[in-house]
Length: 72
Image 1 (cartoon, rainbow, N blue to C red):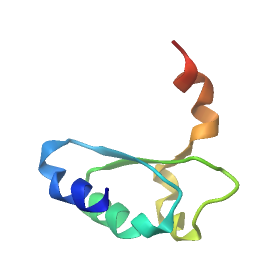
Image 2: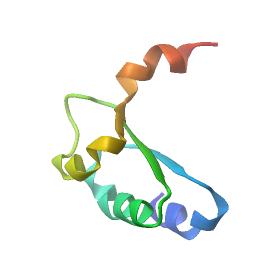
Image 3: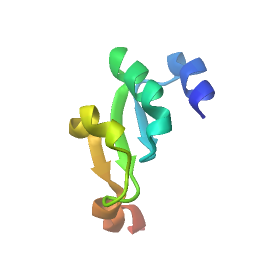
Image 4: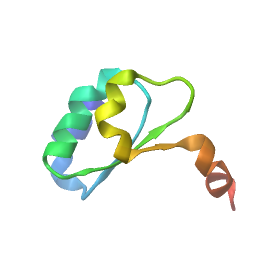
């Protein structure tokens, strides 16, 4: 995913990444730097990488969006 997101960056306007994993830190930093990081959706509000702290303004939690995501 990391490679594809960076390689295809010219093909999308903004990115929403679903992960609470710090392994994607370099992707978050790159997308932020070029103005394409819209949101980081963290699956588990209680357990995610502390490396995401610089991106708190961009973080949202899937649990708070559950009703909207399940709405048909």
